[in-house]
Each structure stands twice: as structure tokens, then as C-alpha cells.
Length: 292
Image (cartoon, rainbow, N blue to C red):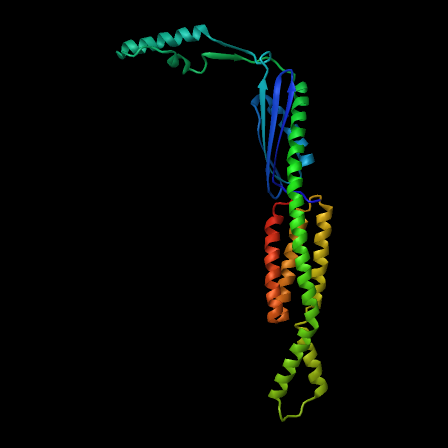
């Protein structure tokens, strides 16, 4: 079954070091393209995360967000540098005196210096963290794929209905095709006879030439190829695995054959049907851009 490239998934996993949360947002894209936002301390796991995602999502623009909420026990020690604070305070006091500033020195002035507060991070086991991150990522991917599959089912249903309508249109045109050729030949015969009226002509040669000209509006080959493409589209939808590019190619071929059919038929009724078919194909091509 086909899948949409649009989806969202979220997964969480608890460990001794805290809670890991993975969020995935996927939209349509020609290839697999991952953008990730990961804490600096976990960046060395980025390649593993990318590999995990690419095994489950073959195509699309993926935005991944990984966050870690450390447990109180593992959050590390937060303190301040007493010597640095004294130095900054003395400097501010000297500046205050030199410039004759009346404002009192406040805590906010001291804290504006980034090296005053010290966060002593505890060492961590990256292997154990990966187990939890992988668990959260697998949940997020599964959640995202369920949404993509639901949208894929909706697209499948819509495509099936449109293919059925197009097939019905083509069956109608197939029934009209012989009479179109015969009518064109008859009109051409009358026109030529009017032109050569009163002159001796080779009837056998005329019949041959008329048949050749009439063949120019014979659309049987186009109808055969269109029916083949419609069947190919159905099979590609059933296969489902990375069908997006194939479906898009088939729709391009269908559009080309329909244009040729409309130009060759030279019939107002068929032209109207061709317009309806092209309208269906245009809607299908727009939706096919979002299939994996």
C-alpha cells in the first residue's frame, strides 16, 4: 500500500539519566533529507539516529528533535565561582566610582557575566543513553509511519476512484474511435471528389490515399498504451514500496498520450472527454508529489 510523505510522530523513553523525547515531522521531498536538533552532548549519536530513520523512512524531508530531561539525581551540580564574583564586583565598584554613577550594584549586573555560574555535568554512559534514545526514536518513527499509512490509504482510495473514471472515459472513446476514422475518411472523400469533379481519377489510388490520411486520426495505438498505463498505475499502487516516483512517471506518460489522442482524434466529443481526463490527471499529479 502506498504511503504519504507527510506525518508526525513522538516517542519517549525513561532511563536512569532522565527522560528522552524524540519528535519527527515529515513532509514531501524528492529524496531522504534529515535535519536534526540534538543536544551537543549527544551529537555523536546523530549518525546512528539517521541510520535508524532511513531504514524506516525512505523518502521525505525529516525534521527530528531530540531532548533530554535529566533526572534530579543525574542533573549535575550547579554552583558559582566565588573568586570571579569578587573580581567582577570590585571592577564594577571601581567603574561606578570613576564615572560617579549613583546606581547601586545589583545581582543582575553580576549575573550578566556568563562565567559566574558553573554547571558541572556528570559523566554519562553513552551506550546506555543510546538504548533509551533508540527506544524513543523507534516509537516516534512508528507513530509517524502510522499517520503516513493512514494518509496513504486515503490517497489510494482517491486514486482508485479517479482511475475508474478515466477508464470509463477511455472505454467511451474506444467505442467512438472506429466511427471517427470512418467519418474523417468520408468527409475527405467528399471534399476530394468535389475538387476533382468532372475529371478522370484513379479510384484505387484515391482509396489508398484516403486510407493513409484517415490513419492519421486513428487513435487505437494511443488507447492501447493508455489502458496499459492505467493498469501499470494500479499495480504500482498495490506494490506500494517507494511507489511515488513510478506513479509520477506513469502520470506523465498518461498525460502525453492523452494530449496525442486529443490532437489526432480531431473530434469535438472526444476533445471534451480529453479535457475531463486531463483534469483528473492534474489532480492526481499534485497528490502523487506527496507519495513516498
